[in-house]
Length: 366
Figure 1 (cartoon, one colour):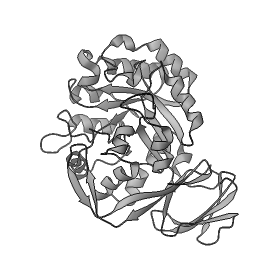
Figure 2 (cartoon, one colour):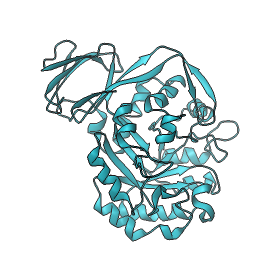
Figure 3 (cartoon, rainbow, N blue to C red):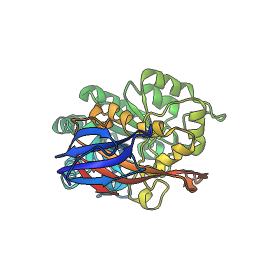
Figure 4 (cartoon, rainbow, N blue to C red):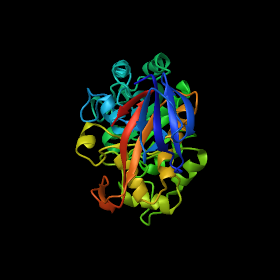
């Protein structure tokens, strides 16, 4: 549906009810509820609308196992209009990921894994010979409209005996390409105190709420000084829930210490989509509602905050003249059991459920 249609009686998170008129893929009017005119009227009374959800950390290269999935399965079918693949591919196969975008409706950007083999194997940084500086720079130059940063996974199982050296290599490559780094943090060594000081403004710490021993909070739940220093430098905090990287206890510590939400992302792939604990973006967002964040704070973390980091403000707003990328959802007041990556369960009184998306002007029901 790409002619003139109206999303009728949708509401912002501030509860203001409006009509959004979309013509040939573009938002042409935002008017008082009931006033929009078009060839098709889609009544969504009681349904919230936001700019299209952006998932800053997914794995969308289906050829890799376990960290892979189909683009639209983790994109529009889950209410997400834009995904950012978080380093599934290195230079060897990045062109295949780019080609797969042509067969999907979801908008796709990506981080380039600094290891040329990417997630073909899960110890991709255990051999420094797999980090080819010239190949990384060449790939970034080939795909400037797709690549938004460099990905480096710094945990013991990935780097092996190389310790902090892959991150030092990433820092050099960041300088050569003028691209920020997304750093996966996990089990040490290297220690978190070695990792975080190497990060600069606009770099991303993903998995910052993980519950592993090598995390960003002390035994009393207070943030480490390296975390507070990083926030002061403008380092970006990204949830990256995943199978093993989100802890309710860490999230409660962050909220208790007033560490603001930057972006909420899923680290979703086929296994944790089908079997949990991720399931969907809506499920992950519901966990932050449970934690006591407002609906506005939660939705901003997957819309305006993510769009700002991507330097694509149009993806994080609803404005006349923009290509229509929107997410429709409800907040349902029914008990739901939520589970974190540690196996800890919490019962929430409400949850977010997606109802549909408009992606590049096309309405698709979820």
